[in-house]
Length: 162
Image (cartoon, one colour):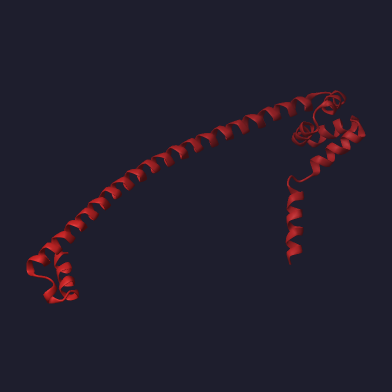
């Protein structure tokens, strides 16, 4: 490295501008500057490596937390589905007229979920004795495909673009 600097200095500077001792002092000064810069870079590199390790550790912790949360959500979803199926089975075992009265009083979203989980024969018997307007609304909601309206709206927008 010193040779490269020396050669460069000799090529760029007129021979008379530097005495041998002046050139040596100049090169020593430049070498000291380069050494200081190299040391600062080494310090920065160590700091960056430490930060990288710290960030990697945090990422691993957050990924573990996320995996735990996904497991918990999956377990909660399964438990919710199991509870709903228990409710569905309870209504299926009821007398159709009694089930119709109780389902008619429920929140319509819940009634739809219960009917959607029932066997067709059981739900048909209950719907047959239910208030006709309520039965029609519930049947219509059961037949809907969730999110279909949004998909159709997006398709229409795309058609307008072309």
